[in-house]
Length: 276
Image 1 (tube, rainbow, N blue to C red):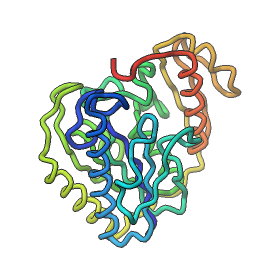
Image 2 (image 1 turned 180 degrees about the vertical axis):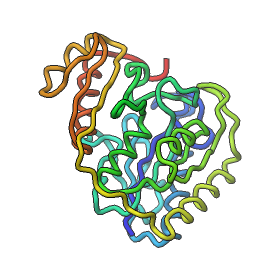
Image 3 (image 1 turned 135 degrees about the vertical axis):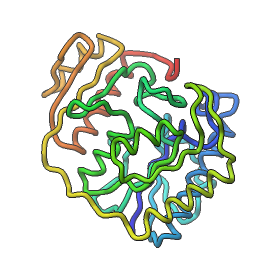
Image 4 (image 1 turned 90 degrees about the horizontal axis):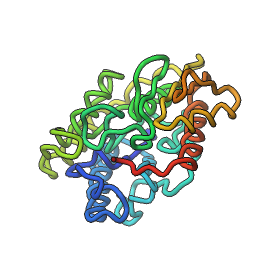
C-alpha cells in the first residue's frame, strides 16, 4: 500500500500564531518540531495499517520546514520549492490514499490561521460554483487521480470543512478555534495518539478508490488586487468576470498546476504578509 502525505503547518498541534509557522518567527523552530511530531504520528499509523511506502510532501510556505533527520526513517520526503504541483507535489494515481496533516480552513472561515494559499491576497475560490479552499482543492485533485483522501488533521474548523466537502474523510481535531489566532489546545500526546490511531483505522483496509475524473471543472478566484486579475487573462483560457475575479475551465489535476502559476504571477506583483 502506497501512501501520500501532504503536510501543512497552520493546523499542527499547539500552533496558533504567525510566529509559530513563519521562518524567523519567535517560535518557528518549536513549530517545525511540532510539525514533525504530527507527521510522524501519521506515518506510524500508516505503517501499522500495512503501508509499504510513505511519501511526505512538505507543503507549507518555503516547503523546507521538516528537517530530514526529524522525519520517521520509513518515510521519504519531498522538500523545497518551486514545485509544479505545490502542496500536492509527488501525488500520482499509483498512491492508494492521501493523508493531509496540519491543514487549515479556507479564507473567511473563523479558524486558526485561516486563509487560502496566499494570505489575504486570495479572497475567495470556487470550484464549479462551490466555495473551496486548500482542503477542497486537494481532495478534488486527488479524487481526479482516483486517490481517496483518507484522513485530515487540523483545528475543528478545518475538520468540519473537510467532512462538509467529503464526508468519507476521517478527521482529527488537534485544537478548537476560539478565533483566528487563538484556540483551546488538545494535549500534544493525546493529539498524536489520535492521529496515529485514526490513520491506522482509516487505512485498514485501504479506502475505496474514487473513479478518476475526466470532466472539465471551472475554477474561479477572487483576488484582493485588481492588478492580478487584469494580468492573468494573458494566460490562454483565463477570463475575468469582474475587476478582481478570474476563472478558467479544464481538468484536474492540470487545473491545479495552472492555479500554481496564477499564484506565482500574483506573488511577483504583490508583497502581502500572509496573515494580516
